[in-house]
Amino acid sequence: MRTRAERLTTAIEGSWSLETTSTPDTWYDDVPTRGQCVPTSLVIQDYLGGDIERLRTLYAGASETHYRNRIDGNVLDLTRSQYPPEQSFEQAPVDGDTREYVFANPATRARYQLLTTRVQRLMYLQSMAEHPEDSAKPVALFDLDGVILDFDARVEAELKRHGITVPPRSDFYMTKRLTDPEHIALVRDLQHSKGFFESLEPIPGAIEAWHFVRSLGFHARICSAPISGNPWSIREKLVTVERYLGPRAADEAYIGKRKSECSGVMLFDDRPTIADAANADWLHAHYTQDYNQHVETPLRVRDWTELDKVAEFLGCALKRSRSVHL
Image (cartoon, rainbow, N blue to C red; front, side, top):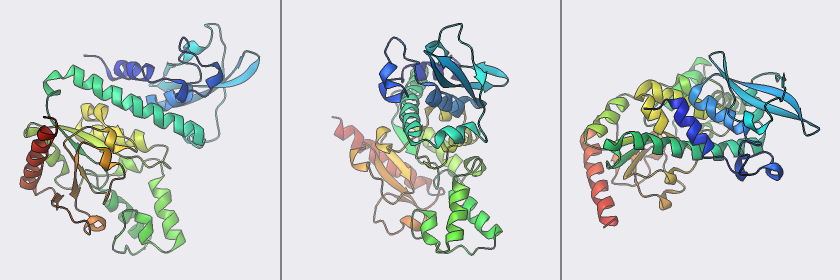
């Protein structure tokens, strides 16, 4: 079985395109690495950790910046082949964190989001190919924040630490139940900070529910949205998934904006409504939180002690899926 780094290399190389390069005028299929260094280095850091290095070089008479990864002291430069072998580079560090620096550019962020979505899909397909015993199993999808991990508890603990009374939450977005601009800024800064997602702890019974679903003969997969304003969101979600659910769950996770891209019979999600649900093949089962109790649905799990409902809902979803595909 190949290593994560080997699978990741295959996935990245299969995901480069004109849409992910910073130099579309000089990008060609025979030099697919051209202009791909920034999103590539971000995706590598998502899965393998380490640091991102910023370099400067003179190429074709113009000054360029180049980015590569350093992991456990070793250089990993997946886009080095865009330059001649004799090309020289010099260090050009930024003030502050390199990831946050490049993420501040909206165009770079868009290219990264496109590349990481493609890479996640290929990582999942590679994992399933290496585990053919699971390829025929129906897929049950789990959201992460508010379903597996206790997002609210972490934010509320921070508010209480500052002596702020936490009002009842009636809106999906935490900041909308606050009125003081300083309190809103505090929550937003926390959610966008490095380390926030790594600090989240599981909701009671969530890990057991994940394994229970697997024991029913389903293949469980994470399907979660990142916070676009947090440069570390995807990286830290993958780290947390691996910590609590194992490395394979991290390799198979989808962390993107369009949950309909994940195929499955059911998605356990706390969001009241999911924008692209009409395009999905899964049913949305609500994991109950204060802000979704107004939604009228027969598919509702009050908490993870209701494993009988989980089994019942999955059975109904599986029957529906089979009838749709007849």
